[in-house]
Length: 349
Picture (tube, rainbow, N blue to C red):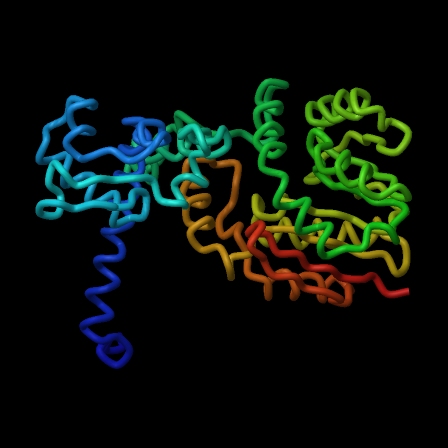
């Protein structure tokens, strides 16, 4: 075994250790912040530590310590300190980041609230017992077993779709595309938005029956049935995808599957495209999103229907595309609007 001293200084070792401990500290502080409704209490303006302790009926000294820690992790801003740090007269407000997360009324958004619920459920389950084979009480099954389960999944995807639509439209000139295949396109939120923005575009959604049913209802309600069609199918089945498209879109799909599965799906995409057609991959890449990947893949420990290492680096996607015969033509990194990257590759003539 190599001597760690050749590669790591004592300071780096200690920083690494306390960074690990700080991760657990941050989630506990965040959960307590949410559980006590602190954002809604401060939505109308700052309050003193003493007033917060009294209103919440909490132990004063422990509350002062708690509020000080919340300021250290970026949820609160200490704006006045007449006495010592953490005294009853110390006044706190929400930071801009906390305001962005909780909104003007101090209420955590539906997407964040739902994902925090699942994270807490996993966190409260004995991880050692899970590793030893404990039945999973909160397992998410694939494919969704009921229309209700599919509706919850597609609701989750729909309310968080703004970032992906922004990234796709920024990277791709959809005015030049006639026929687009949106694979695992869910309830058609993305398809409906992009066809409204691009008059020449026609979209085919390929998805499982429950999701396809939800898509058809949304398309009909939006009066877009003449431009968006729905084909039922399973991306994991042995048969291929529908064929004859100018563009095959994979948006927030590949980050659920191991690299072997993604390799197969990229090969299927090649067959689905016309010559000179393009494949568009819109995903949160591991290169730019380690915190997201850690939190998501921690949950995947509790969902046996999903594999390991599903958040992939940009270079891994490039290798898979090249191996399938594509030419990489464009790469777009995340911007300030979303954490999604886009890779575009072309099928040769």
